[in-house]
Length: 282
Ligand code: PXL
Image (cartoon, rainbow, N blue to C red):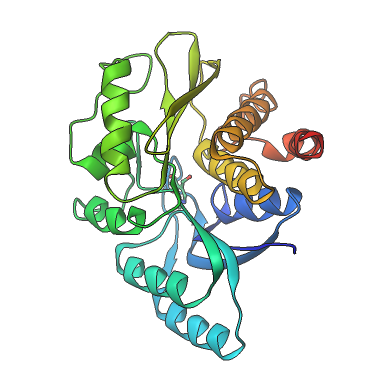
């Protein structure tokens, strides 16, 4: 049977992130994608100023009530950028609209480069930890992992990176203890010229590395999580879906690199044919 996924995250009208990435990417993976917008912003918050923000918390309970009346169920959930007050409602939505065996993929979107995004206060990470508990997969970057665990940020870029393999492996185990079945930690690097991810399922740790592209680009976390979710629902294992996500991010970055004027996101659209082809090959 074909699977239906519900993704819960914001609509940034312009900026190539969140729903404007998740909907096309997961659809391109051949998976029906339903959406629950958590908020509507005129743009994302990383680099634009004066953006509008409309929170949609009040609509969520009403939407849930209608879905329950219509007996609508989902085979998977993928959550991204949400507000603190929405987390208990999202947990309720996942409990009440799950098809048997439904997967929970939680990207704890809240921070990067050692800092929380604008609008997230210091209580947010402990609330996000509640969403991670009971997830099938969580996909934090190293900054988000540090906030979830309440530990100092060890750095995750070329300027500052004070961690080694032992540190990352302890981090994976501590994240697993939050109550997720699989941890995929992104932005991991042990050598200057490589960057990748680390997967932990409570038993084994698997790494996947690509050649590092020496440029930080917005929206890559959402491109990663969306292609990961699509790959997982198409039947890939967690490490295989994690590798697919990493490769798709690289292709999207490569498609963007030569265009200096394109500062706000990555041209993932250009890499969609690659993603589709990879899923056909599997
Ligand atoms: O890419 C994560 C993200 C999602 N949504 C909004 C954002 C960001 C990152 O800055 O601002 C609104």
